[in-house]
Length: 146
Image (cartoon, rainbow, N blue to C red):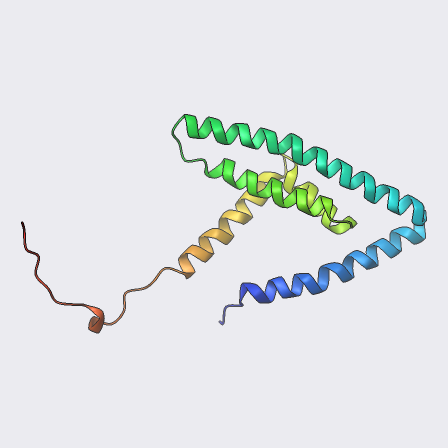
């Protein structure tokens, strides 16, 4: 099975997400009106900025504690990535990106995002590991001990 390039997924996201956002905005606007739709989008952005500041501060403190204790801060770094990504999505106007952003920011839904992020990183790391080549790549030599 041929692997898809990550760039094809990025291209598809840049094509599909705006169309989906426009569709949802039109549907919501028809139900509650244009002014209320804009006010809700502004409130979403303000909520996203507050969540980003609040949860980002918690993640930063957790990262500093992990580093002070001398342990690998994998969980804390993943949380930081998800919080920044979620904050960016919440600051972007649209209901679909706001929903995904909230899921990435909230502490009780973040473990799901952490697992997904770990799978993506692991898949990319294993895909980019260089496999040993044919025996022709081996250079015969001798180690001289000084």
